[in-house]
Length: 131
Image (cartoon, rainbow, N blue to C red):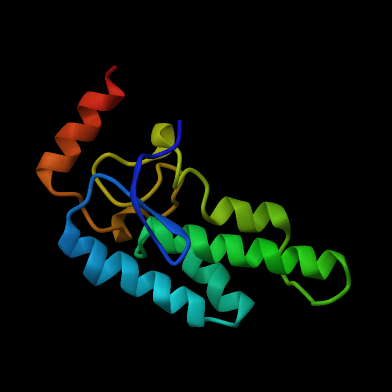
């Protein structure tokens, strides 16, 4: 089941269970940053880092997958495989894999780098997961 979205910014779905302050000061800023990035290695690193907002990480992964399509058609070189790219953002938009205590996926290798969710959102997500 996909994470509920509450808005769209620059074509990216903004996830529920976070406050407006975080959306404006972190999520939207990081989405803008990803749109400016042109280096596949930097995008790959960004997509895999739990220190960044899930929505921006999903965008970085989506951009890399588009570039991988170009690489498969011989229009661009890509140093990463589709599997590697998809693994960087695994579970970020899936409710079953979303970390209820942090803004990351349970699949992340370094969840301690993720911003912690405030208690009201943790409790709300935990209640939903128990259903």
